[in-house]
Image 1 (cartoon, rainbow, N blue to C red):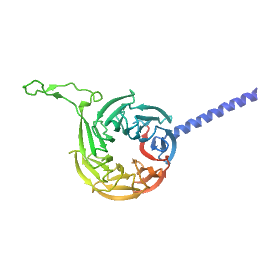
Image 2: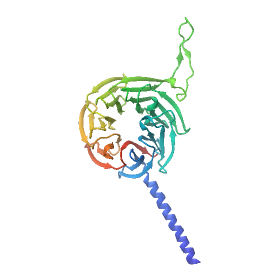
Image 3: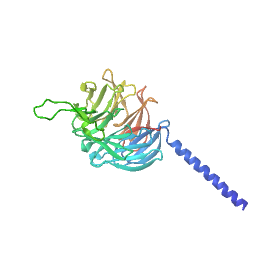
Image 4: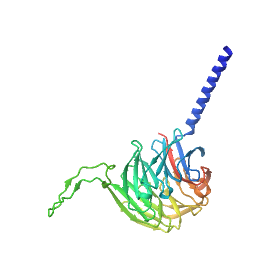
Length: 359
């Protein structure tokens, strides 16, 4: 009996050690700061340790994933299931347990694409519905929708206070600026009487689209990838059909310059963290094109493969990640040397990239 008890007890101890090691490994497998990268070819989201550039896990998402964003606390990832406007879902990944959660059905808001997470909510474009919408994870509902009236509302940028939204509208060749306003008065409707300001109760933004205004600015043909400068003064957009770059002065809301960059099939555009350089990718060109933001002139071209899409800046390590879709890898670019220093295999057809930062 003594020998049997000893072996049983030893087995329990060994099992406890194994479970402890597994739990410790799981905790270590999700670092405080995780790189998220989509693979269109395998319909997966890869989580990558930025310190080792090794893939931690590959998690299933829906068909044709295009963009990814993480919640502010870094525990959830949201993926737009695009399908060229056919699909109507956002895939959700629990980054703590590394498991797929039920999809969010966007209903008639088909073709979700651009994503932001601001104010505890998921903001997304719905290309097929010509709209921008907002999903509240706490209530599990889409609590706000606004039409843009523009064709192929594709990418978006939401300011930190959620008061302004910028969109590129590819087929219309426009940039949209949606701005929240607070209605305070309305004119009198009495015939022949002078207009008299009447108080109007303020309505929450989530309940009425009437307290949002839209400014539409014509840019180049096929504008898609864009970014706002770190100082918030300029918006640069890459125009895929005519190869130009449009620069919008956000104070005047006018095009300040149009650059004949000759970057055709341009896909994404990002400022470096210091705002000095602008990176532009093209799905047709094997070069990463870099512009000097101050002079508005081409600074350098870096050979990265046969074409590229998503760009993600790493302000901590001083590098950029570029999804080289035709080459089936993510290129790592040193921001000081402006050279490719490595590659990451996240699966075939990489595209959307994002950070998940655990709070």
